Image 1 (cartoon, rainbow, N blue to C red):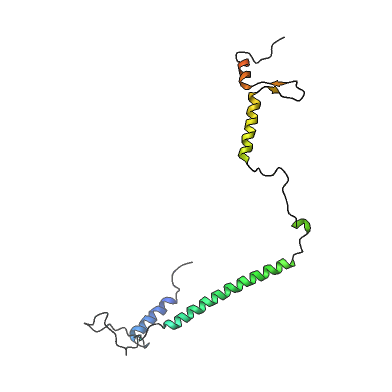
Image 2: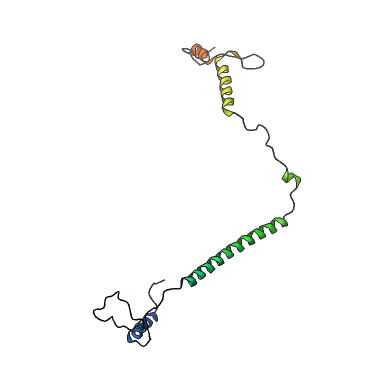
Length: 164
């Protein structure tokens, strides 16, 4: 999309400038201020292009208040309609069954109350098993010895099975 003005816009602008400069529009004439008059000097109130008063603040305030009231009314209406629609949707749903409203409790094991204490107990039990003597099966056919003692016994020996 080009930003150039259309072909009819340029002649319209030129015609407006020509009419404005000629004084036929009844607006300000294209005349410059009298020589020697400062640029910020007060203008003649009889000049048709002279504006005698500023914008009416009361009217502007009323328009802005009306716009703000309109915006708040639209927002309030949308919130009300949204609440009414969701309420009607909830009413259209069937009631919940006892199974859906029952309180669920998770099956055990539940969360640990003090996981660090549990971890310390587990490490102590593992450490005692690795550093102590005992049986490794209920039938008492296999024994276990401390890791340090097992390493002392194995050092210097071949781990290969003896040949027969």
